[in-house]
Image (cartoon, rainbow, N blue to C red; front, side):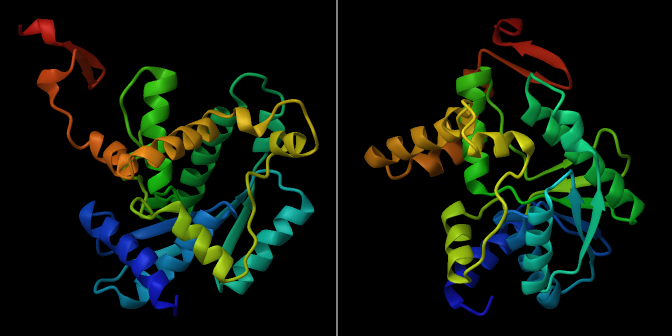
Length: 266
């Protein structure tokens, strides 16, 4: 993180999200969850930088769950961790084998299972928080995907408490960082990271008729890029939309499992 540009584009936004959303408190022990991709690897580097300069103490564990990576992909994680001086703790899980047997929504199941294994490992290591590497672009894509494919308005929260692991919390300190800046950091350092390395992706890359371009997230990226050609503020506006909801102009909303309709008080 010696380059001034990357400190401005990356570390300052990382620190801003931590302040703005109150993500870290003194005495926290945080499991930094590394998938092997560019986002989580950068998050680990930023956490190390933060720990060197922060005013109060907190602990870090850098954990990598191997859900069934090929030997080449596992080696890539080891090599990158060594290059970036990240002391990773790698543990195994059978997720890919389980997901391979599922025909419907395998990616959703994979994400859910991953999170459970990460929470459990973090808890075993004495951590009270897990950190995931979702960034600004993930957030705005999630907002739009919810509207277009699920008929709902929701966002990827910067932090949330676990329902299944008592005392555990999930934080997203990359929340304000743009993906283009992550890519610029990767390229400037001549680094190569894993994409999604599941068996489904391997089939896609080997010519399987299921095309990556058909994924909802990739379609959403294209929609946002097309809209940006006419409106350079479209990404910021999508992000801000979930901060500016007026409940008096909403037909219905849900909270604590209960639906509230505007007709209830009309």
